[in-house]
Length: 446
Ligand code: GAP
Image 1 (tube, rainbow, N blue to C red):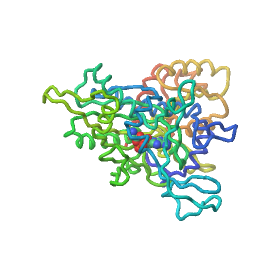
Image 2 (spheres, rainbow, N blue to C red):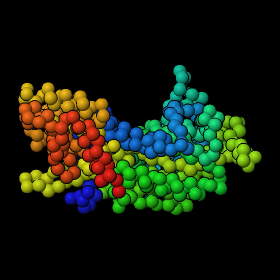
Image 3 (tube, rainbow, N blue to C red):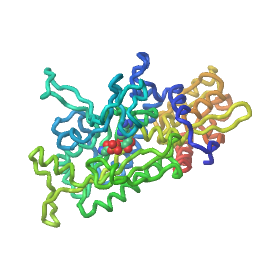
Image 4 (tube, helix red, strand yellow):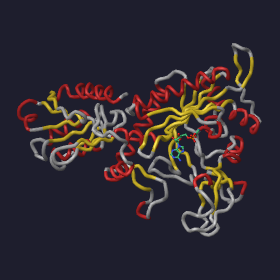
């Protein structure tokens, strides 16, 4: 679909739409807002759920080689020693001797504090994991962490899953859930936050197949974003240089999106080798080797990991879908979201709040509701309601008018992108909506 906007939408425009329409609010806003933590409002929670469902469908339900898991956020603290996060999940920071603000050492130039003019000390390593205590005593023995990645829940359950499902290599375990990082320089709205959701999959394979699977998962990841509406021109992959790979990865590549603030990572694909299983074997004393029945040998599988952020993906989808079409009086703001991602798929709009229309409009809603996520709206003028639905990305509106009740028992379907209207009998409405949504799906994929 040709867009009116030709350059990336500014982040402030998305932030203001998200707030105005109830997608995302700042955490604890009535107390002034908690830094870089966000709450998802009525539309945001629908949209983020759709993003996660789309990923789960593509990753787990449409494949034979991947199963799901939902591990707890709290884990034995020894997990994070074995994984290398206690020692290595750090940022080099410098601290001001006057105001005690901390900065990433590579983000400041010179020794002067940008806030207060104090002197910055020597760089020190600062661990990004949130710490808390478990049980009644607050001592070092009770210290545990909020997980900084969901991946470790998968590694420590590798044997449980492999044993109970009797899987042979290669196979994967997928998980969606919250992660926490005490980021020093969070920002760009929901792009980098301190509490966020990850969608991660650990793919266990024979070591000599790892490079092939690494390429496969890069292609799959790009395919996922394109399938659910992100334009190919705004996506690229970038292989990490030797000095930027995480401590556990032998090879890493990012899928990046062209935001208004520059190309930025949506997903990272890592070749984690046998790093995690080897370390968990060593620290737990449990032999996690795989017995290869064909080769008649035991070895630790290698792991390829596509790791995606749900919040970041949602931000990219919002940014990519945003459009403004010039109009005679004012421009039309719309989100050209993929129908599987849009918070509302179908809006039911009686032409006016007239007693002759409302019972039929309600009946139409009851017909549509079991099939699509739908919303009934009878406030304000019909023109305004179309605009409101365009602005939140609703692909189709169904209008019930006086002809519906007095003449033809038919309704009008309006297409968000083309503004085309077609008249269809109520009897065939669900099938017609399904066809139209399919058409918009095809149009949205790149
Ligand atoms: N298990 C591998 C791992 O966690 P990562 O590159 O640190 O790798 C994977 O994170 C993805 O999680 C990122 O590509 C990003 O989408 C998301 N992510 C990471 N830190 C985030 C943060 N502070 N805020 C929002 N999303 C984040």
